[in-house]
Length: 236
Image (cartoon, rainbow, N blue to C red; front, side, top):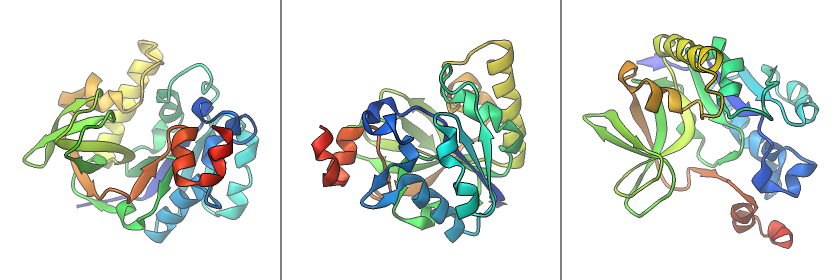
């Protein structure tokens, strides 16, 4: 078994699908029923004994400065490429810390803190089994290992969530691959998840950490936000 030693929270994006709210507040700091999204992520990590947390910021970075006071152990990493590149740029800036990390997006609500447990067998993603059709990324597994990822979604498979854990060895491998894609190949418009799932799938043995529907809720746009928090219906 492996154990997470620290976390990387990706929080640099502009949250364009959350406008007009995100014109004044970065998406991870928007409150959902009175609680900021990023607070549920950090508190979930703390509940599992993970206190060393790197938060990658970019858009309205100054709005995140108070996190260092509110949560001792938080370190901010600036992503200067946030407005020109996809989120591969955020993990590129935090690439020295991938090994032994749990990596999470900041714009999700953690309702079951147990899904952020420290121990894991294989590098890989938190997933929910989906019988019905979904447009989210879908993983196929065999004998406990991921064999395929479909970006177009599907049904009867494992829906990928933005929570993943990486062994020290896979972290070093992922760091090298990110450097190759970002620095040498100038492949700046991909998701960092593309590295292990599509660019170099033969280099990784990925597993799945099972969750249940409702353990984590990803909020992509203001319409989805309004479903969870009726206050935001006025912005539709």
